[in-house]
Length: 256
Image (cartoon, rainbow, N blue to C red):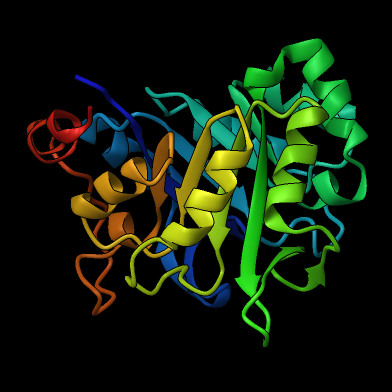
């Protein structure tokens, strides 16, 4: 029985957890440590903590905050936000994070991926790629919370990241993030067919069936935010995660 990872993505802003929709209108969710403790009880596969303000404000990662959060986690954690140098990567691993997620600097200085992978291995270096369609309907990659367009297509960008040593691509559809519209399967198909490394898909998940569909489209793992921090699309805050038997019955057992 094939298993895929199902990963909650937690967005950090000014020390607290928030949730956005299409990268806009952050809604306060609560304290990240409390969320991590609940996810411990839910037996999640891994967690990703992304600071959505650090890079845009020119801040380095808040290492003390990261340390406090990861010290409560019983599962592997990834962290992204404000990572600009090899020293930042080293410091993040020192506080207990198992994987760094690089977004803006993967576009501006892809050599950082190579330098990090040379020391820690590609499996510890992930690239977060944010994608939305332009007015012509073409997919475009953006950095810095969707504000800075990259000249490469998503396929070209993912292949470049892989060539520089990234061990994983996390692709988020800006158009679908926080909307419950389902994953962008065309985007998943295009990128997964072009790379050899794992692809994590994020943005738009509604339910377990969306995880299954994404995996069948080529995703190696699935991620979600709203689905795991809200009780419904009415935006009532409730940290949640499928029970293991639900994942087995409705996801793992249906994967070839």
